[in-house]
Length: 101
Image (cartoon, rainbow, N blue to C red; front, side, top):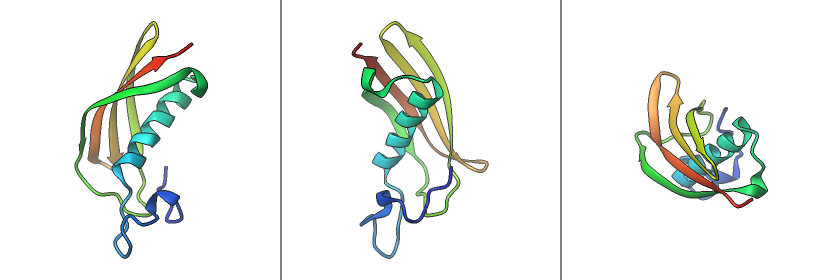
């Protein structure tokens, strides 16, 4: 996906030197898990992120790839993720989600 320059995530972060905020990247990871596993948003929620590391700031126009390795155990899900821009590792971590249904 391309981080579009007109994305609201760039608003005020930072004027004259825009970078995509880490919170926005975590939101994209959560969305990728829900879509990739075809999980209903209303039934699943992020419980916590663990061991998150960002290695590089991403600018408008960056091409982001989200790689996932997911395991599901009943009402919980563990998604190890890696964020890449081309061949470069720009972030990684683990998302734990729980089902409320």
